[in-house]
Image (cartoon, rainbow, N blue to C red):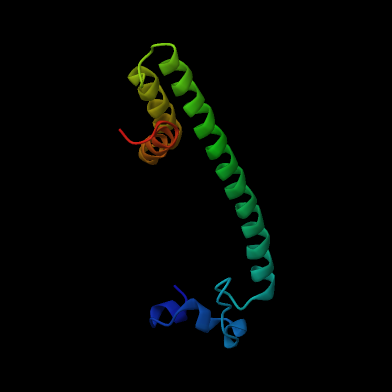
Length: 112
């Protein structure tokens, strides 16, 4: 273990670049690391926007399905379909997938 860790002093104090304060937006004073963080965050922001766009599209489509089903005399919900969706997300994402699926379903049909 490095001496800085053994004495309880943080690793940031052990590096020569740690004299400059860390940026409040990146958490680092290292310019190269800050540039890399900015580039990665730009990609994250693009992914977030794609998720938002797809979420809204999915919600609208789900609402269309519900309106069409009810207009034809069908039920408000098809629980077997909802279970199928929850299971697909759980298999792909683990326990968090269940929560994502439940949020998606609620966005499309409203709260129960």
